[in-house]
Length: 433
Image (cartoon, rainbow, N blue to C red):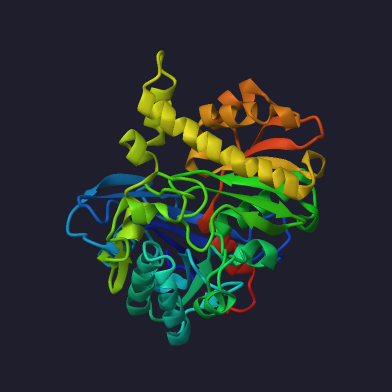
């Protein structure tokens, strides 16, 4: 079966992983429609790209493939480029799709600096993204590797960068400005940018539809909780503040990230903070400080594992294991620090439409959600324990698990950054659609 050349490929490159989805436009291009302008054809992912053996998984909707699901270790893949080449070879071999059917390639790029929206990859925009790698060396580097591979392997397709930082371009100056020399700050673009923006855009649109409210009138506090975690307060459909800052290391701790610390701590931790540690990817290098705070900290440093499920299990044993209990309590404590602040920024819970949990941990950990909402009871929030226990049985992207006395809901929203990019691409008039 031959397909017209209109498919959208969404690529989400992590430091050691690559998530892949392919979508077909449905023909609906109304940006405010409740019907999706794209339909998903397949998902694939590669993990452990920096520490083989690499694991490849694939799931596909009939009738484009006889292989509906596949998962196995693969050999000969050593990095993002060879992983992407393996996926395209698998696509050609196992499905009726061909790489020439791909019209647009959407790349999730963590740091976009002052870009306020997606950009078509050109020589100029590629080098601009490359120049921002100093602000996110462990994130932009992987995306640039995949972008370069796409330009080589899919030269006839439009490669488009979608930035996690763009959603936060609305943060006002009194929140985004750091109290340092203003000339140096301007020269080096040192300010709060914020990240996870594609996730927040998806959640905002999805929750607004669920609440039957215009996006421009929707007020949310959203927790994107995963190995990388952040909180965002959205007022009238726009980002007002978020926990991450100049780089993704600020704010909440993560699996291997420290989160917010006293900035002097790193110099007491090591006298070699500014020494080049290693190459993150290609020509992008990281300092010893960046490596420590991004890859050698977080709950792995406290509990000895990056698996939050393992931490939860250990924290809720009787008696609990101390290192797991400590890691769990630290994470909850840091989350409520931001929740309290953001409630005030919205003017109290009466002005809040919903408190939203998302991300891998936010969507899966009933224990974390219960602990956070328990600490929000002073603000009038109550948890529906049964709904919280049965989130995995929900149909659709959103489930209500509680509410406040003021009427604000507590929601769990399954986020989808790849769908968000494809959706934006499909409704855009600027990328050859």
